[in-house]
Amino acid sequence: MSTPRRQAPSRPTGRAIFLRRALTDQATIGAIAPTSTTLATRQAALIPATAGLRVLELGAGTGAISAAIRPRLGPRAVHVALERDPTLLAAVAGAAPQALRVVGDAAELTAHLAGAGLDEVDVIVSSLPWSNFDPDFARRVLSKVCSALAPSGVFTTIAYRPSRLNPGSRRFRRLLDASFTEVVPTATTWASLPPARLLICRGPRVRR
Ligand SMILES: C[S@@+](CC[C@H](N)C(=O)[O-])C[C@H]1O[C@@H](n2cnc3c(N)ncnc32)[C@H](O)[C@@H]1O
Image (cartoon, rainbow, N blue to C red; front, top):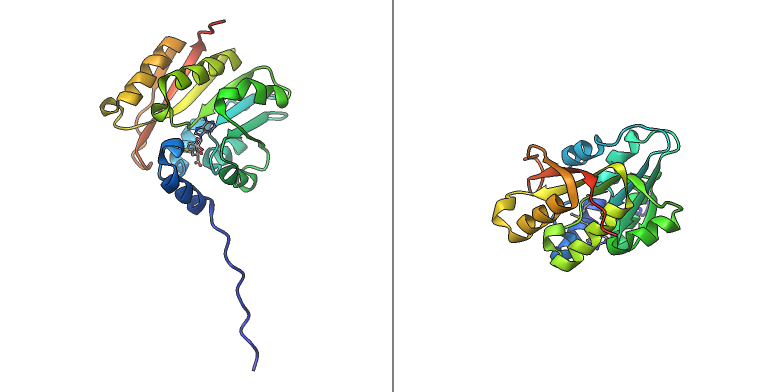
């Protein structure tokens, strides 16, 4: 009689890894599930297929948006995926092998870009939990975003609904309005958990 073959323990999926981290550190993770494919695809659609485009992703998590960015990239484009949690970022290798994965804090994004040989980028895609950030920290990170963004570049970030009921979201929206000449909200993606829309920002006001 043949002995039953023992199954190798299954590796946790990106979603399971994300949920585990979200349950232990909700304030830093800022969501209970990875970004939905619909929202990630809408966000990545803002990336033009220009050759040599430089894209910075903030809060790459387990790579839902990184994966949507992948088919948008033109020849010689660079995609830097920055995430402070190395366990989450490890999953980005499978989701978006093209991405240059960097473990680090968004507050140090200038140094992380320099490490990748970049002094500015054309598109910054964020799913950072801005409304959970301390106001001074949010201001510091956003000022780095404005400094790193090319003058004709675009910054896009996810805003969870309902934002009007959340003082942190309202404060962040005021900060965006003060930091960019144009802030355009999209329609809500109700299929996301939680439902969310994108804020699309152009014209960075750089304070030196
Ligand atoms: C809502 S989750 C992003 C989810 C990601 N788009 C995905 O689908 O997996 C926010 C992410 O921002 C990261 N994060 C929070 N604060 C950060 C910071 N200061 N610097 C870099 N990453 C940060 C969290 O670790 C988390 O992975």
